[in-house]
Length: 562
Image (cartoon, rainbow, N blue to C red; front, side, top):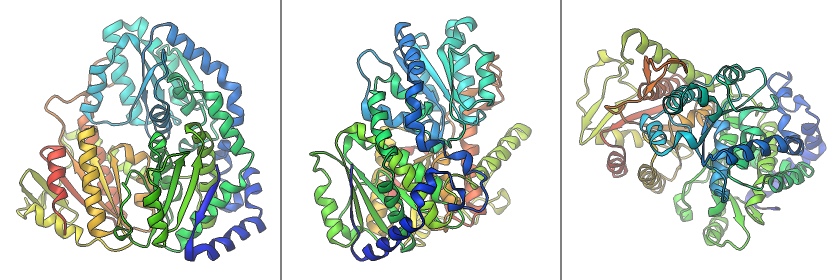
């Protein structure tokens, strides 16, 4: 799994930084936990380095994991649903997408959306008697995860009774978290206690990732063998980080991923790792995941391309060669087979830690993540007190679209009468070279809507020559949300928010009763309002668009280019 770097005019700068990497003994100091590489104090550093050897240590945990998997298979379970956000959900999704489901194992899905239709869709398709729920949260207090748990616990109780319900749940969490107590109270089948010295986005090779991987029948020992080999040869990974960090300081701060199809899911995991680790203190590297490759002419001079290529796959070769010839830096990593992603988890964790060294930031904290959560809680409190979420006045309405601009933030400003198309085009005319456009979709995730968002992002990139990202809310709040508020302010944000359905899904107040004072639809909109305000408070450019119908509205928006 070698890295081939074609850096063109940047080769000399990168060579100097790699030489400095060696002089300062950075690789060894990371392995030794030397916090002074990043900050003068150890807070949120020395207790976040458990990922460095977790692959080697997890071999000892495999019997416990295997016993759980064998037991649920013997009991006739056919499905598993991960209830989690961010670092608790992304690695399981990668393993399911990469390895599929082996015969006789559990078909695993991830629920990381508070959209009521997404929650209800899982309840419709699953058989409670044959489903295992993985309640997965490091902190043990994630509001979305506990909302999912209360809903599905009550759902299982109604179908199977209280005595049987707990056996359909397992917990993955840190020792001493609130989830440990919940698991004991409700008789969970099992609780996996993770190493607490690992942050969520660095946890792919811990229980958070490997329990789901084992449930789908992936060859976990083989995966760990590839990862352990990388743990014992970290210098190339450190050099990759030095390269990426140096390129970012030279204006190449949009790290764009192209992957062979069988490992394409890896991009969503590495997106969180890089965004949440580097986007802070007015700095940041934007990971661009899922943006289809285009001709060189559609890109600005702020891109670096990373090509993860499986052996004998030539799908992207011609496009990558054209980008290299045009002068864009290209980093190519060749993988022998999909199990090499075990090593890639380690490579990119180490590389990201070294990027933090080069940029002078702490890659293990997330100081801006809480801002949106605090404001969302404020919105929820308003709902609980008054029965309604805070209102913002529309700036324009028509043709199935309602548009809210940043300057129209309160009911007192009056109902807007502007043409929505004009407002969208005016907003987009403010995009400048070096910016990026983030499409934030607080809508029901679906293949149709994802395809519509992909068409829109490509149209925006091709017209404006800027990087684009797509994220479903609130999922992205636990992934790229830190970078959105913490970087240099180059983001341009378009929220797409659909109203809760008429048949909204209630969130039980507790797991012991069906009473409810909150719905998933209200929670989703509260999170969108909180994130919008957090972005505005950080001085970001934000436009909110509410389409009457998600995919149709996005199709109309795709035609509204400046």
